[in-house]
Image (cartoon, rainbow, N blue to C red; front, side):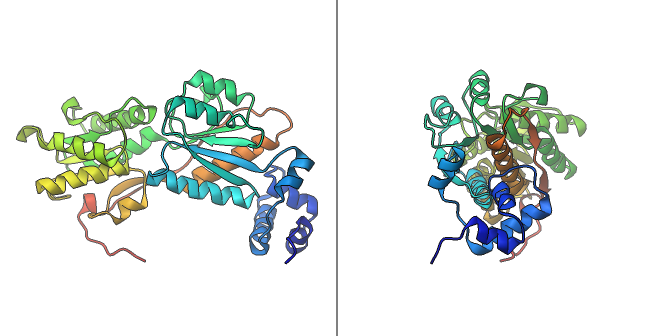
Length: 345
């Protein structure tokens, strides 16, 4: 079977070859309606750009990289899925790399791993210093994911994130609104994400007339199940008058570990303690009880990141850096409202 060409896509969509080329390159000067029509034709015909021909014609490979801390974390796995989907619609291929949060590996990825084959990088950094990313971003197309504490006036690269302070404040307010008065927080850590979620937590406590007690905010070394389990066991071991009746975990994985510790100790969720989190992972939906969580719009995060990167790759002159805020929503489930639900298949 002959390979599908730009002309085939153009004929199918009823547009010019130049328009199809602009869409698959991510060029900004195409109307949304035309872009959607071309992308439907790309999908229906199974068009895939020839990377060798593209590189000879444009000097670009059509290959971008996504660098995330952990491939095994459900949140990042979902982000990777959405990034690949968005990139594919623009005719881009995604190389996915795991940095393990190591500064040296993050910096290597931020600069395109030292090869001319990669056109740009989407990076979720944990450790690399801000000034080092700033130097890279002025020379190489780079989009950052995650909460690094930049204000718009301090942006050193295109940056896509959710409002962590607002999200944490919202979920903590939900717990306080249930009448819970000893609300714990699991997730204190050196990262900017942790600092912002702790800030939102403390603001919501203040709004509710509750006092922040550092004994109810154990530190963790990572946002994983093991740390959630250990931190919750610490809280369970407090004197009875200090034990929490609600807990806000800074990630779904922390919450799932915490729920295991509560199950082992014979605590009822949410009867004895309500549990809520941030991440919106599928694992939280299928846990028992299902987990109340803030759900970031991961598809929107991926779309914003891929679009920003494509625009920067294709720009003829340097573009100003942008900070884009993706939406989120609070999804109330069994771990706070106690209503048993049957999952829809």
